[in-house]
Amino acid sequence: MDANDKTTEVHKKRVRNGYMMALFCAVFWGIWYVPGTFLWNFDIVNEFQELVNGSPEFGVKGFLAAAIVITGLNAAFVMVSYFLWNLGLGKAKFSEMKRSVLELKACTKYYFLGAICGGPIAILGSFIAMGYIGGFFAAVAALAYPVIGTLLSRVWLGQKISQRGIMGIIIILIGSFTAFGVVMYEELSESASMVGIIGGLMALCGWGVEGVVAAKGIDVSEPDIAITMRFGLESLIWWVVAIPLLTIIVPEVWSYIWMMLTEPVILLTLVMLGLTFGFCYVTWYKSFPLIGVGRGQGVGSLYGICSLIFLVLFVGVVETFGNDDPIYIISLVVGVILCTVGTFVMFTEKGGDVESLRDTGEERP
Image (cartoon, rainbow, N blue to C red):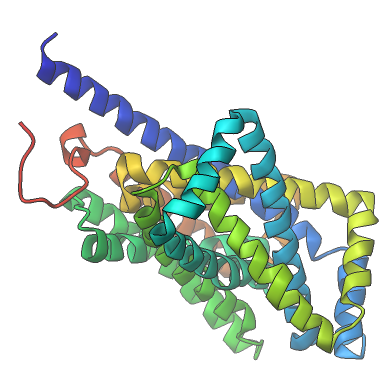
């Protein structure tokens, strides 16, 4: 085997590993919607909303306060999972993390921007969509995020994508709007609040931008370090800024957080939330340097079909869709199928199409 053959074989292995990471991301991401949906059904969460609203009636104020608390707890438990993950990888990871903070200050701003896009925008938006409309809508709402990521990665990072990859993205976009449009029509026709739909749009935009920002930081640091720093910064946003400010409005917030942490079933749900989302992000970030942001996000969007399977199995059909209207359900399922087809169009690219991630103007030998 000559040098060119060895280079080709190494590249093929790299691409296979990248797609494998993205597929694992889709599975963990799909599972994450199960504990995320369960959290909104606990009595303590409902009592907290009633306290903030000042009445047992459903209100946006209490709902948003609960969403902030849930998102903050999600970030905290993800950080616990990353501490265990890095501990298992060895002390060298903690040393590398220290070095990255002290010496690679330029990349820290990308992690901070990623934390803002991913936390207060995407993840908070997804929890809002879960609670206000339903778990499956929250999953489908963000399925077009690879479109934003691909366009930004082309402009900002100079990453190329083939015509086949673009075709896959277009199919994903059509699938997303097939589902999103009917849900929006249903919600508006019933004079329901747009809060849930806005949450879905937040998730769509936030995750699309975060992928590109994260890739910029990963250029100069390891994915394991990047993801830990990103969630560490998000945790600071919630627990040093957002939740203390919420305490000014709702002084009882800490007591309700304590009740959630001391309730065994809720605690187990939070642990599952942290583990599934933690490993989802680990595999998501690892896929970017291997196959590029657009492809990593595109294959990762298979989480839509994964969430459908897991939500129906563990939550139930009506609770999964949040509406028993056949047209509503059919549109969501068709949207997911189209997004899955688009993902496989991307996934079946020839190796040469994935070979160069950078648009350098040069061809590989």
